[in-house]
Figure (tube, rainbow, N blue to C red):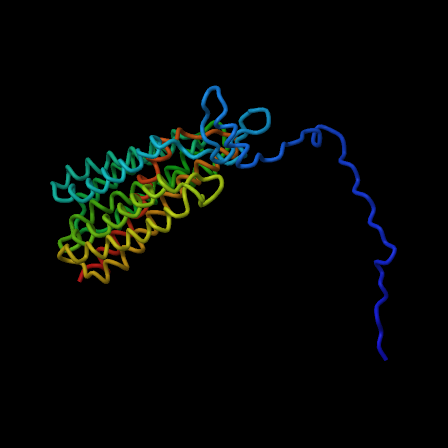
Length: 340
């Protein structure tokens, strides 16, 4: 015995869609996106020249809409990142061959620059607490990295814990407690960043580790430099619609960093090429993603409607954060893995 289901759709006509409710929420209409030919004709039309439409940043009526994807930054605004990568990479490698106090002074300049630029990009409540705690931690971490015997990251870790307590105390004395969690979390991120730069000082004091450190720094610098250079010629497709970084640059940068570390292992006496390549892959990946994180921080502030720092500031802050975050990773790889 079989049963066949009757055709229940016979003679059934769906009701018409209800008209949209009238009111302020439904009154505004948005025009359809122009085609490529229409955009080309608009760009070639006589009159004042306008920037190329690289991702909409203006809503209907020409007013600015911070929820739309921003346009790609101008070429000049992308150059500070490349300059910072070259200066920091050369400074970390060449400075390690100088006297430790001189090297620590140069690292302190990078730490203060990273604290100021990243705070400018993030724009948190109670920024004075972040600046004071991170700057004091930078000076203290550099001092123990130069003078502590034997060389160890233990005193730097203790100082980081004390900085956390100081950040909590600073939040308690604020007049308003708005954005306490965000401010405290970002303060600790900067604390880890300045301690990461102090790791380069401690690593330069180890006898057999500096050659491996050179290989790791070259990997990080090459990865960021290649990613930024690829973004100059291939800014699209983006890694995210709201972040002005190209997807090709992230992938190519990581591969270039790995290859440069392997080659450094061949020409630098110390690290084995195979170990240098594996360590370079980790360092390059962390450096590229940390550089990308700065773009996400800027995008989150813009989407929230709180504005953002100028493009050159965001561009320069990314490499500073990348070298800071890779500091502990470079120390561990150089001291315990990459050296023979």
